[in-house]
Amino acid sequence: MAASRDLATDPTLQEALLTARRGTEFFDRKLNELPDDAFQAPSLLPDWTRAHVIAHVGYNARAIARLMKWANTGIETPMYSSWDARNAEIEHGATLAPEELRDLYTDSAAQLDAAWRDTPPDAWKHQVKTAQGRLVPASETVWMRTRETWIHAVDLNNGATFDQIPTDVLKRLLQEITGAWKSRDEDKDLLLKASDASTVTELGDLDSDNPEIITGTLADIAAFAAGRSTNGITSSKQQSPTAPRWL
Image (cartoon, rainbow, N blue to C red; front, side):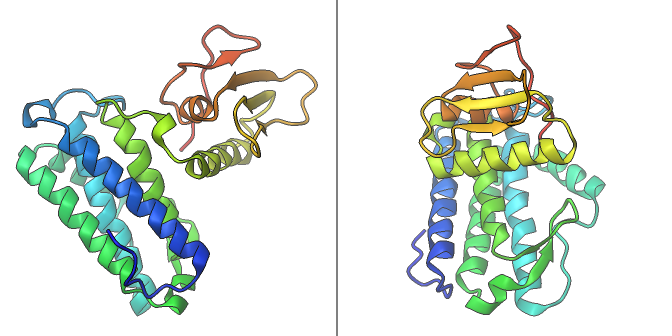
């Protein structure tokens, strides 16, 4: 998905759009590697098949496109009418035939990309509301989608790993997750130490006198913090550490 026709002029936003589009292509590649008869196999997410993941990522693109409509028109257009409606939509999507799910992903990704492409510079600053109720500038939708595609490509459970996710995405992801822990006061005495990160080396409770130290590569630490895997990580206090809830 070429970014050459974007109306956005901010270099940081342009770079973020490029990363988001690479995430779209990464998910698309992992989806295309799946044969149709593998869609109902388990994903890495509890109680969700691969079809659930595909449906979620497809409908998420439509939901974010609604936020871009809001930013461009000023007419409030929520991501979902309700959380129950969002969940019901995913459950319905998971029952679609593989060909329909593939089309859902492709068409919704193209719809969102067109919405981003046609959004003028000033509209990116307009406030929209996430599904969690946070007011954010429309530019935040790029990170919202980036997070979805890269992580859920791993959740398809057919070979993608966190070490294939760009370093800058992993770093922002860890900052977001540990920030969520801190906001709920769930980061006490927990310190994450990435052994291969030059600028993000320690996150979590930096003031504890006796923290539980979780060590691993940046990718392994991110997978642990996101609740996906404990592979490659070690704890100073437990054999089988569990990360606090992210979302």
